[in-house]
Image (cartoon, rainbow, N blue to C red; front, side, top):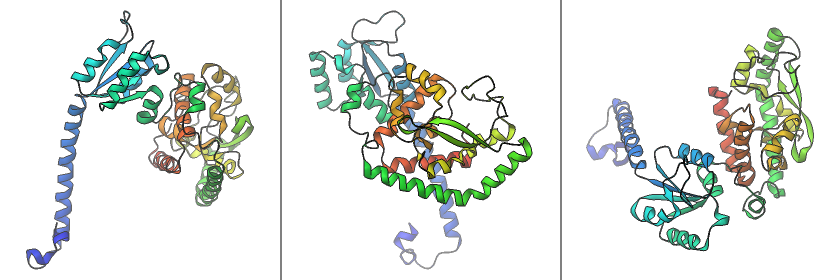
Length: 362
């Protein structure tokens, strides 16, 4: 306030201790406001209701909604009377009463393509009256920044807005120039660190320093990805396998490199020559793609763009060591491909820097 109204208003000059005392008071006031907000927010959110309309097994969707809105109440309404063991509040006939009597934040419709005309009319009335209505895909995109696997179909891929990264030549050219710029500047700035990492690997683990692995790139084109070696030699003597959490094949120094994502620095070269983009889906090994394509619908959609040194799935989820992990990461990859803007790339870069600086990777 002193800086706004000026010292002359309160008479005379101010002492040197005013700034320090003002900062201390501001800090205490900020802590008090945060305390009030932290106590008010869970209480307020616990008064909010969400409604899920479903006509079949929805355990995964229910779990995702409850993990996203952990404080809110979720009403699950089935078309008919729920079977024994199903997590349900009631049936579709209870929708009007719930929306009328409760503070409903929104209605999520799990099977919107099969809705009867009477339900469509009711949902239209609900939406016009001020309550939000979401399809499953819209709900995931809006609140989880990912696209679901099980609820995606060809009609959605054909008709949904977005996917500009696939058919935007100007955007792709700009992204390519950005890749070259980041790769050149990053290599120059990080060259001393890469030399130190190479020396430590050579001294502690012997050769080879770099590990080259065949990966699948844009449009299914194979390429060799470069990484600093983080595993013992002959780590895959028994065949290709997913890297695991606390993998015994990882060397002691390799654990540190993985934690801070330093092992991917040689991939700057892959980005520079155009085999990878600096930001995109994680490249996958051909040995796993056939299996994942059979188990995960539209898995190969991630190969419509160049793989990335870092990406939305990497910063949001980290490493994966199973098909379930691959399925979750694919949801983030699909969101990135569908909703690519430059601001999302900037957000990924900032989040990647946090992983490197604070070692939140694994």
